[in-house]
Image (tube, rainbow, N blue to C red; front, side):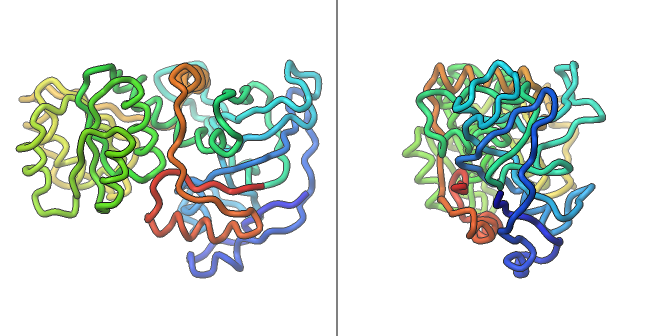
Length: 335
């Protein structure tokens, strides 16, 4: 089969040499696994970090990618039929505890080969029928970022209709899914971005409003306009999370799923106890969360926000696009 293979890690400028489209052994399903012919895959920032060697346990050569949609090529005695349209849960070995993942938890695409290939083998328990309202392209966008957003919004944040929700960094995969989910759930959604075009696009998708987080003291301006934010979904950490403590209303809830800006240096503890805030960490999601996400997007007919599409043989260009942070929604790779 053909696959996009990371041969070695390095700087993004060397990616076209390090990430090679070449022949690779076609996997053979073991007991309990199915073989999937991949139609579309999608990228996550995790993939870019791995190419730079900024992720623990990196090995090469490896096929990256955690997201895909495709068809069953070999059902291998499972309940699926050859030709079934499916999507894949990239959360491997979450465990039985719904509150957190166990120590053997991993994500498809490292340490095991991932989805940027013509075929993948994966245990059938991680495979789900594709919702009929989604194309293969649309379905491929959901798995990693969609699951992360689902757990943050509904398992940890318990967001419901009427909540006033602030989502930081819209444009990124998880943040954009969080926006789409919360709008579908009937919440009043506000967003931040450093790009005015992304703020305008978010409003066209149904957000109530937004603010440019590059403006000095943006949090004070935001509070003047929208003083009753009771739920915040943040993937930035750093100074942004510190400002969220000020923005969140009394008794409100903050959910964090990432730390692209690093540690929170000015964490004002008095804000936490005096405002009686609830703070939750969240990452990926359990098998149960994934099944519930599929049910939610099927019932609400949710569709992803797609940024751009690349052919797999030009996959390095898709990584460069993601590294630029100019995208609004998910970057898709046609296999």
